[in-house]
Length: 464
Image (tube, rainbow, N blue to C red):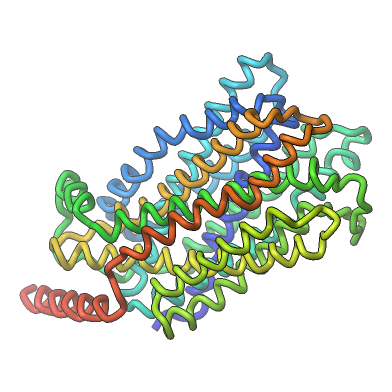
């Protein structure tokens, strides 16, 4: 039985990761276009090209972590070692040096690649940790729910407070408005919080599940992975789900700035902080995501992970299509639909993490080799690929629709921005439904696999 303290400690890790991930997903595109001064199409291309390295670094990190053996375990040491570089590089990524356009593009490519590498070094081992904290499927569901609950709490805090912090540091600290300074200082605050949370995760968690046999060769692990059909299906479904999320998140600030025109609407002030509509919209979405996380566990127990996933994504598809026809005057309905769609989106991610752990067990059951880090690296890879494809599409389509930063947009551009919040994400949900419908590992099958693996471990221990 895993104690509450350890569950919370595990949750702190994704609370930290998710705060930065939401800053990337919701604000990095508009930072590059409206603050740093890069063309939208250039940013979109950069997001996609840098994924070439990420597509290699995630499984590579998984292989390295699987072969790490320290007194602290295989995966926990990377959370400790990677925390400080993670925070420092995050600040550098949101820095705006005075360079010409070519210099800015080079700077963005280098710093963003370093940031994603630092994220990989910490997040792949962190995700893999779920597979070795307990061999019990129900424990993993609970840990996954704690992880996602804390992730959404962190995301809520980041999305609610980030722009108010940017505005605060831009105007209150320097004495005159300096947007670039505001962005750097706001990210620095979140960096310190993230580092502390990673240290707490390292200190509060433990690794318990040991492989049945000694670590196999990397080539064998890769071959096993290529033959793991459930893994392929989860990878595709995860990428599609992240495309859905990344397009909506990345377009939200554009939607409120250029379509809703939030600057003409009075902001909500509290404790001398002025909360903008886009931040409230995103933050409310995180609370709704958290509701989805809470609902996913009892629903999946009752009707199964697969059916819960399909039902949630089907409802999200329908609501997203309807969202396109909501006018900007109907702010209440815009927020209501954000809540409903976000509940559906929130419910699927604990299921995905839990199913990746099942894939690790399935692979060990079939091959005798356990490659937890390699399999869980795909979760990080799908997250980054989905976000990159969604962000690249957003950048390219913004350019296609004639977007020009910090000016009034033409009707075609506004129509395109509305599609980013509705019809385009719905394509991702449909694709995700198709792929997950083919996923073969039911709860009944996983119970049989778990029993068989436990017998093997008992036999292995007896021989020793």
